[in-house]
Amino acid sequence: MPIALSEIETVTYRTVVIGSGCAGLNAADRLSDLGEKSLCVLTDGINRGTSRNAGSDKQTYYKLSLAGDKPDSVREMADSLISEGVNGDTALCEAAASAQCFFRLVQLGVGFPTNEYGEFVGYRTDHDTRGRATSAGPLTSKKMTEALEREVRRKNVPILDGWTAFRLLTHENRVAGVLAYSEKEGKLKLLLTAHVILATGGPALIYEASVFPESQQGMTGMAALAGARMSNLHQWQYGLASVAFRWNVSGSYQQVLPRYVSVDADGTEHEFLIDAFSDDPMEGVRLSFLKGYQWPFDVRKADASSKIDLLVQAENLKGRRVFLDFRRNPSPLKDDLANLDGEAGEYLRKTGAMQGTPFKRLMWMNEPAVKLYRAHGIDLEKEMLEIRVCAQHHNGGVAVDRNWLTSIPGLYAAGEAAGTFGAYRPGGSALNATQVGSMRAAAHIAFESKLQPTKDPEPLLTQAEEALRGLAFGGDPEETGALFRREMSRCGAHIRDLSSLRELDRQLRKTLESAEAPLEELPSDLEARVRLRDQLVTQRAVISAMLAAAEVYGSTGAGLVSDGKGGHLAHREPGKNLVLYTQMEGGEFVTEAEPARPVPEGEQWFETVWKKYRERTGEDGDDCDQR
Image (tube, rainbow, N blue to C red; front, side, top):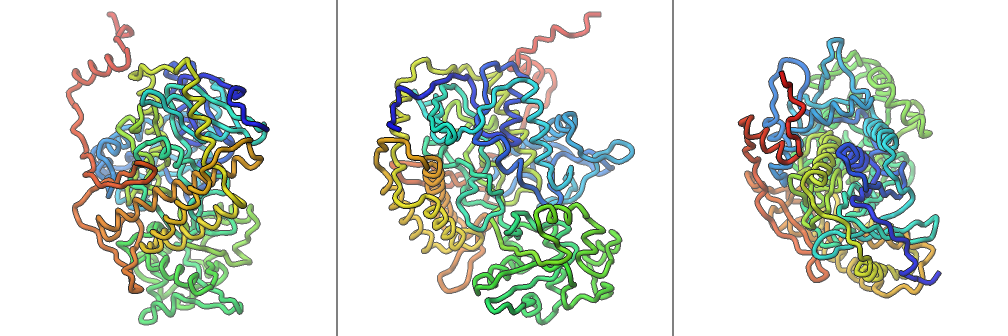
């Protein structure tokens, strides 16, 4: 089909939300409540994405404590969210609105449990010492998304399903349009708009070893190509996950103490933790228990619980596959658990999980975790579960301010697309961030933005034509993407080889430059080409940040950096809270470090806050009691 830009369907909405997960649907719901009439949700698939298709043993929502007698406060929670690379203003916003957003989900029907007195009892999660976490089960984010979708549909917000947004268009130094493509219809669509909320999730396509659901894509490169400033792209969360069915093996999957086994090409089994901890074979058992709530790979625990991740990786590098075996206990562990001491022994005894095999203990502690795998054709009672160290969450993303506004006026980012998490985010803070960030973006658009869509599409049509350049890849886009994902997992995941990363960047640049040619017609595999370009652009941006981080810290985020002698560095300067900002300049990515913004001192005098609130929102107090 010849490309005729004049035939592109052009539609106008004041606000376009890209993405249909927890962040995108909450943004649309909040905008509708705030009176935005010209609004749509643009999604490549309403049932795709991480929110709808991912979870874990006990998927967590992190919020202010709402039970018990232990004191908590907004400022204390903000401090808990502060780790390497976190700006204080976004941390304060996420803490301050956590209860508000949590109760909104409760009102929408998400089943967070309470005790008989109505307290939302919490538990401890990764990088958390306060017990702020709660859960509606292993599919918490799916339940959130379904509840939010019901609201959005009830309010008749238009949902443009099956459309892949692949280029952000700007005019007069602000966002002005979105170019999208429907593979089903074989058509392009230009959306003229004044505001875009980017809620496309993390860049799920850059790693081969990944626990992102296969339906998840991400479009971080789209924001980078538009010139948006990015933050902390080097920071990722990696951890052990199953590969046949992509799922984190955290929580009770580890706490029931499965046997770790590697299998070589001859089919010979190796219980490799015994060799690694030959001086005290029970140490491997104790550390595997700690992986339950210390699941993310952490360089600070490289000689403790995260040594398990490194040992799994070492077995893979030997050409061996690694499995969790729930059928039998680890060899050093007695069947009656009599030799299990310390935290693991106390936990299992208090839980009543003293059964003779890991499978029986898992059935006792968390039967839904067993049923989940059965539903995907894996019977943990009869077969071993293959695992790898996988990329699970991007802690970086598009840089935002306290209103989740990016460096481009009119462009916002929320959820995992936004870089607000830092190296050591508490488990479950990502779900809270989807709700707080999208709510703040919606409020800023509704109350403070005066932007309106352009009425002249011509400048944007010219940009749309340019956007179709850079897609003339030779060969199969799927194969090219798979090759670069494999290389990224090899040298740029939880272990990072700087020389290999530099070479990978050269190959990425060469591949992108080779595709810089105009398209005379829309190819049948346009969507695959779009995905590939976004993947390669994102990989280049991430590599820029990883190389810069190695210079600044020696090692940072979740990565061990190779010293070139077969060893690894895990150095981080104490007391430094820096944000690494990456931006495209002249076709190349440049990364620079800046001090993180501190937690601000918010106004606390009620009358002053009330006056400013009325001015910002238009609330004039007319509904006050007139007695």
